[in-house]
Amino acid sequence: MSCKEALQTQAYLDGELKGAEAAAVERHLETCAECQALAADAADLSDALRNATHYRAPDPLRHRLKKELEREVRHSPARRFWQGAASGVGASALAAGFALFVLLPPSAATLSQSIVDAHSAALTGGKTIMVASSNHHTVKPWLAAHAGISPPVTDFADQGFTLTGGRTDEVAGSRAAVAVYAHGNHEVDLFAWPANGAQLPEAGIARGFRMAFWKSGDLNYAAVSDVDAVAFQKFVALVKAQRE
Amino acid sequence: MDDRRRRFEAQALPHLDAAYNLARWLSRSPVEADDIVQDAMLRAFRAFDGFRGGDIKAWLLTIVRNCWLSAGKATRRRGHTSLEDEELTAPESDPEATAIQSGAKRRLDAMIAQLPEEFREVLILREMEDMSYREIAEVTGAPIGTVMSRLARARATLRETARDCL
Image (tube, rainbow over all chains, first blue to last red; front, side, top):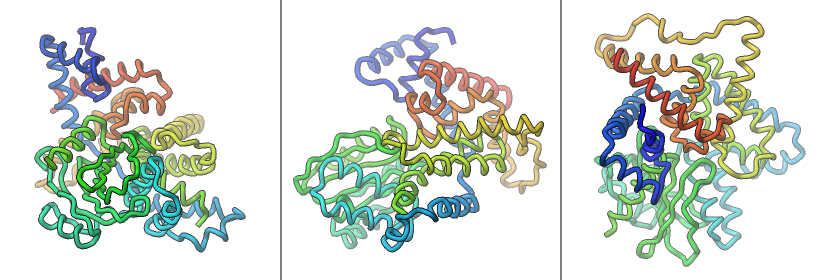
């Protein structure tokens, strides 16, 4: 590569640039054939790499790790006290987490914490989906019946976000409906819960997950995922657009 | 369950696949990847009280990379050879129906595995783990400018190899 803007173009394609910097690259891309080729190649390469092996931790390793962690804490004085409180990573850890939240009025920080806890607890426990369906006519009524909340549910498969199902969850003590989407190997959770006047957090990253919050009608929404910034913004834009 | 362990499992275990994927691509060996990840997760757990918020995925992957580096040094001292590229030499025993597709996948995996380490790691972190430049800089301990140029080199190398191979 010989164009001196190539690294900047790459940064733009990787979703690293915003505002004026992004606009400058867009202007540059209109006239620079080399960077246009770079952009096309980068997209091809990203597509190709989706087919490369994404290794997953083998189950025996997972089990061994749990045992090792257990051994690590065996002599902890606090163990007996907590033993009765929670005995698994999935539902009971979630319950223990939320027991704390319901005592507090949900602040912006609590909401943000609560969303990441719920998302990662679901991922860890392998319980992200309670109703598996790519059909919004199935997911929407299921959520209405089980969460008592009926947010709009749309499949964005054509735009790269495939509806895979839904579940009920809790956000800072409120019952929430969650629509679950797949983007490549990544999961995107869309939470909806009744707006109760609590202040919503700013969009941001916590523990490796991106989050965005907004209110529409009488529902609060939160999107959470570990997809890249560009994909995440695209998803949020798609969801917001479906409501207009 | 112990509160610290509960918090650790809730925060760290969702990134176990990412930890394993990085260890597997760095070491190019399933046996070594297992050891590296187990070592890294236990080290992370012991150091968890010192983790003051921030990005836990980047924090964990930094520990994974450090464990890989120290495992590599130990292996070299003992004079062992790496188990790398085992899948490149594995006999083609796939059913005919999937042979073409899996053959292309294997070639792609082989091309990534053959990239020099410093290119391979930034490529995996960016393309598979969707990490930002800042996060990759944190994990690899390299300045952002270096991350950018390594990423560009990794992609250019892969494109050239792909043109020759695919």
